Structures are given as structure tokens and as C-alpha cells.
Image 1: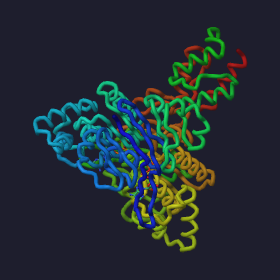
Image 2: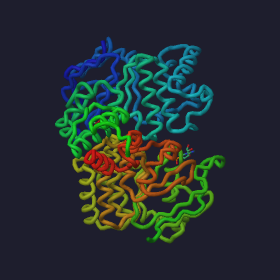
Image 3: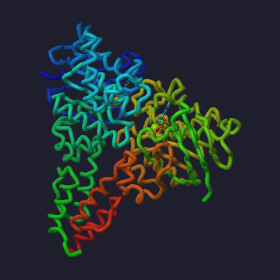
Image 4: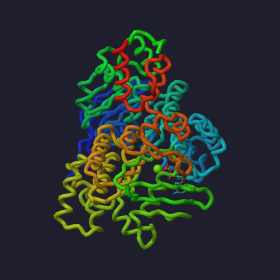
Length: 290
Length: 276
Ligand SMILES: Nc1ncnc2c1ncn2[C@@H]1O[C@H](COP(=O)(O)OP(=O)(O)O)[C@@H](O)[C@H]1O
Ligand SMILES: Nc1ncnc2c1ncn2[C@@H]1O[C@H](COP(=O)(O)OP(=O)(O)O)[C@@H](O)[C@H]1O
Ligand SMILES: [Mg+2]
Ligand SMILES: [Mg+2]
């Protein structure tokens, strides 16, 4: 059980001059417990795709199965609310959607909405705040007086408080400074490892994709261009070129070194420490005399 | 070199309590490309808004092209300073993409033919020509940002400020915009201030300015500033991969210097491989 797409199509502005096929014949099978990166050009359909994963958008045609709920395109589907609780979707710039007077109320909003008691929602709010690495004394502050990075964490805590099995995030680190990006990615990884959350995230940062994702889905003009193992994609230069994708910085550096020095290195090397060691070996050992 | 922007003893507060800009001094020269780095909340966007007179300083002066920014000069100065904001959602006014790009020019008494020419030119530069008649609010975030950039370029101002304008773009989009900025620079008559977290973008600049807590804490050549690990970490930033690899390789005595530039690092490795 996970999330399955079966021949899913999605049209925006159907029947108007601006009609746009944002998803075309999407077949996709997502297992629980993966860490998945969704990448692709601006306008390739990433946001549209992930909004189908908790039925915020419903297919124009085709079928989406979300856990045990089936969403059939072109029909009125009932009782989809439960899906939204189990698959938590964090929109792009979620901090713009904070609206309550206190951080606590904002985080409690989701659970309360799904019928959890006030007392229990308050407990969940505290837990969720811990998961996103924020201090408990923020609870009574207004969310609007926090820094951008803190606000985003509060917004994510609001989704986590519903205790979803799957966390879907649309460009969650865009606009954060490098330190903030690093902390946020580590936070998702911890949720993945310690809370067994399935993580599905849209990002343009190939360095983090290489570091954390075990599977990549590439979207291209509304279709799936690649779906598979992270390093299988990064080793496939034809696809990288075809879809104008970026390689991780370290992979680009490795290729650069190979070309200039005429040596061969392992393209899957993922840390500077390992790259330095590989270079020492390839160049015939460390130099102790210089 | 002639200064085009001179900022002296600048202070600003949103709430009369915390200083978002705290005694900032900075001179930017004509035709210079300056990258401003700093962690979230260090005051970069506030500075950008002060520069175009959207906010008024608590104290201090901003001179643009020898004119002191004030209520009287603000409209003149805005005609010389284009800006692309961080969040594209707040910068649209037109009902189509084409109208939107035209809007900025309408305040500048530009002929219709010239307007049309510029719209065509810049919409192509940002690869959005297929969307000219679309409604801006229906575009995706990255598409909106491209349109906003085309709009700012079409105004053909002396100074251009990009406030994290590429942070929402995909890698191809970033490269397009960086190439575009490079072209503008080569054309040679614009001063470019780009606020960014993207090291690659900062590397292309003539000069890097690092901000922290509302003030300038360092300024210098990209190759000098970006290898200062203490400074970078202290400001919520990170050193480039090339610097990290240099540090590792130094431990093995394979190279002697810390390189910011990838070409220089690879060249040094190549030289080592020859003597080995
Ligand atoms: N509300 C909308 N109305 C019409 N077209 C839209 C709307 N939202 C998105 N689109 C179009 O659908 C395509 C896919 O958009 P989106 O899923 O946002 O892409 P991505 O997230 O990959 O940038 C784009 O061409 C975009 O212009
Ligand atoms: N509209 C506002 N009202 C109150 N405080 C603000 C506002 N905008 C920014 N600030 C505060 O001013 C400081 C500088 O913010 P900003 O200039 O946006 O930083 P940066 O662009 O470097 O991330 C931060 O502490 C921020 O919280
Ligand atoms: Mg999107
Ligand atoms: Mg800012």
C-alpha cells in the first residue's frame, strides 16, 4: 500500500483558450518508507503532481490510489478528508499561510480540524514543535514575529501534528540561507529515519538529492522522464542533458578533474573526504616531502 | 571609478525597537556587479527596499547618482533603479504577461513601438515567449519570476537590483539568468546588485558584500571572501565545495593553497599529477 497513479491526466482551465495539460498519462507507484525527490523544469508539472498525492487536486482522467482510498478522475469522490490527514502536504512558502495568533493555535489547527480533542491537540503541538527543532517557549508567540526559517518550521509542524504517514513538500528549502537549508534537510532525514515517515520532496538542489534521496522522479512537460535510483540518473549523462538537469556539484567537479588529469574516479563519490582519498590514491599516494 | 550609490550611516527599524539596518555604510561604483550575501534576516531585503525608497531610513543618507534620496527625488531615482523582488507573487499588476512587462515602461514615456520591441526581446531572453497572452497569476512560481525579471530589464535602468531573484528557479533558469546578467555586464552600462545565496552567482560578481545583523561585515573579491570559512559560517553561509576539497587535499600535501575557483583547483591538481 502506498500511492499509485494509473494513467492520470490533469488539465488546467479546461475548455478555455488557456487549457493546459499539466499531467499526461502518469503511471507511478510509490511505496511507503522511501525518500523521493521530484525534479524537473519549472512548469514541468511537479506541483500539480504532488497535489494529487493528497487529493487537493483530482485527476481529469485516470485513477489515483492513496493508501486505501481510490480517487477516480472526472467523478465526485467522497470522504477524501481522511487522505489529507495521512498524507500531509506542505505547499511552497507555507509560512504565508500561518494565520492564528499563536504558534500553538496554528499547529493545533490541523488536529482539531480532524476531530482530535483540544487537550490532545495541544500535546501533539508540543511534540511536533520538538520534531521541527523549535523551542517550546515559541508556543505562545505570534507566528508572524518569527524569522522566515522559523515560520516555515511552524508551518511544517502544523502538518506533522496530524501525524501523517507521508510528508509531501513543495520546494521546502527554497529561499532559506545555506545554513537553514542544511538544517531543514537534516530535519526531514531525521523524520524519515526516526519517525518512519515517507518523504516526497520537490527540489532543484541536486546536492541534497544526491545526499538524501534513494529515488528520483523526473518530470518533463507533464510526463515522467525518469523514475529510478538516484545514482542511476546521475550516471546517465544523456538523460541529464536531454532534460537540462543539473548534476551534484561534487559530480561535476569529479568529471572536471577526470577530463583534465586523464584519470578515472568513482562518480558515486559523495563527500569531499572520500574524493580527497580517491585522488591521493589515483595520484600515487600522499606527498610527504613537499 | 565613479560612485553611483553612496550609503552613509544608515539606520532603519520596522518596530522602533530592533534595528533591521544598523549603521550601514557602503559605496557601489558605476558599472560594478556586486553580490550581497548574508543569512536570512540579516537585512538584505530591507536594504533593497530602502534603496528604491519603498522604506524611509531612520537616520543616514542614500545617494544615487549624486542625488540624495528623498520624497522629492524618489521618483527620479526609481526611474534609474529597477528591482526584482524575492517573491514574485507580489509584483504583478497586468492582466496578461505582456501588459505586465509594459506596465513599468508606461511610467517612462516610451513609444509603443519601442515598448513592443523590448517586450519581445526580453520575454525571449527569459524563455517565456509562449506565455505573452497568459494571465500572470496562473503561472508557476518560477515562471512568474522570469516574467518579473523581463519586466525589470525592459525598463532599461542604470541600476538593477535582484533580491534573490533566482532562488525559485530551476538550474536551467538560474543559468539563463546568470548568463543574462553576464551579458548585461559585458554590454557595459549597468550597475548590478544581486542579493543571493547562490555561491556560483556570487563567484561571477566583481565584489562580494557580506551582511550580518543589519550591517556590512566584510567586502572584497569573491575569491578572497568565499574562502574565509570562519566568516562564512558565522554568517549562516557555507564555503564552496572547492574550498572544502582544497582543505582536505592540503592535509595530504597535494596542494598548498585554498582555491575558490574550480578551474584553478583542477589546474593545480593537474600540475601535481605531472611532477608526480
Ligand atoms: N491554475 C493554473 N491554471 C492554468 N495553468 C496552470 C495553473 N497552475 C499551473 N499551470 C500550468 O501548468 C503547468 C505545470 O505547472 P506546475 O505544476 O506548477 O509546474 P512546476 O511545479 O513543475 O513548476 C505549467 O505550464 C503552468 O503554467
Ligand atoms: N515587514 C516587516 N515587519 C517587521 N519586521 C520585519 C519586516 N520585514 C523584515 N523584518 C525584520 O527585519 C530584519 C531584516 O529582514 P530582511 O531585510 O527581510 O532580511 P533578509 O532579506 O536578509 O533575509 C529581520 O529581523 C526581519 O525579521
Ligand atoms: Mg512548482
Ligand atoms: Mg530577503
